[in-house]
Length: 276
Ligand SMILES: *[C@@H]1O[C@H](CO)[C@@H](O)[C@H](O)[C@H]1NC(C)=O
Ligand SMILES: *[C@@H]1O[C@H](CO)[C@@H](O)[C@H](O)[C@H]1NC(C)=O
Ligand SMILES: *[C@@H]1O[C@H](CO)[C@@H](O)[C@H](O)[C@H]1NC(C)=O
Ligand SMILES: *[C@@H]1O[C@H](CO)[C@@H](O)[C@H](O)[C@H]1NC(C)=O
Ligand SMILES: *[C@@H]1O[C@H](CO)[C@@H](O)[C@H](O)[C@H]1NC(C)=O
Ligand SMILES: *[C@@H]1O[C@H](CO)[C@@H](O)[C@H](O)[C@H]1NC(C)=O
Image 1 (spheres, protein in one colour):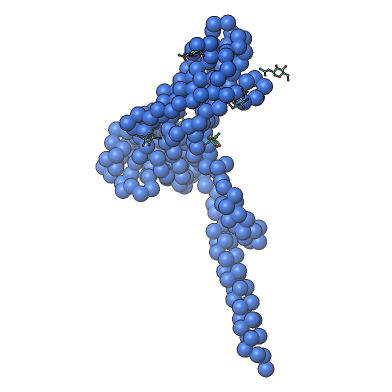
Image 2: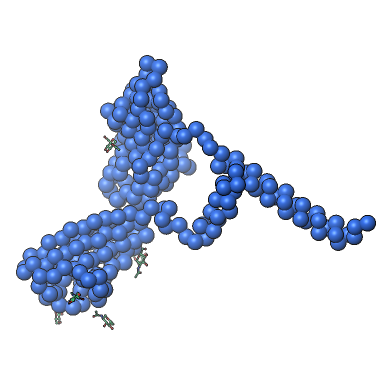
């Protein structure tokens, strides 16, 4: 005769196994091989620059089938949390009866591009409220599927350089969210600088940064301005009284910004996938 304690013990063990089995089944369902989606995006996490246009990339297999061509594809762009469509292209024409008014005259799909399997959406003159999750759904002769594009909105501009009072000053007109600034020399050593940020009524920051040490002629300075979304690295080459600059922008992708906590959640997910 088993004692009450033993019954409880084994019940708990069995319960744990049942829950574990359920979790594995759930994971198996979630990761079950689906028909490979032929709708893709080359840029799932674009960053738009306030006031500028941004392209949300969406591509599909343009092969014709059953007498239909890629140009006959239906392309539907929606934004999570908003009623209506951002843009609908169907029967070789824009169908905007159900377009959300926020996107009136602000969004566009290119018919010529659709004929080549390019269903990308152009958003004009982006504002902060445009940030969010967009979905591109395509029904084409040889492909069908939906792809998600996460638009983030920032403000960024390349700095311009000048010599003031024997030192180098860089001014960048618009940055958002709030950036920080670092300087280094050709060797990668950090240089001291004084940086001031002023924000306008829209919360956009103007950056003014001045190197502490006097300017050396014929040398290279690297000024990095960055926030959580954008990093601009400018190489300023001083030659006599001339300053030549070259700026490269790079953007954070949400996946590389993954924090360790999220990685921990991924471990059991991965295990479940391996077990299936
Ligand atoms: C898709 O079409 C748009 C508009 O013509 C173009 O700007 C973009 O570069 C195209 N994308 C690709 C991957 O060709
Ligand atoms: C230029 O440098 C001098 C000496 O360091 C300082 O007194 C002066 O305020 C500086 N002027 C500007 C515009 O920074
Ligand atoms: C860079 O490093 C080299 C060798 O380490 C040194 O000679 C040079 O002075 C350094 N230049 C600067 C600008 O710090
Ligand atoms: C930068 O400033 C700090 C504190 O003012 C000082 O200790 C340091 O030596 C400076 N570095 C350079 C490279 O001038
Ligand atoms: C400007 O920045 C200050 C300090 O960082 C902040 O308190 C203020 O709310 C900002 N103003 C705007 C309009 O964002
Ligand atoms: C500057 O901003 C970047 C991006 O937000 C951050 O990773 C970095 O730690 C910041 N650096 C400093 C010195 O605050």
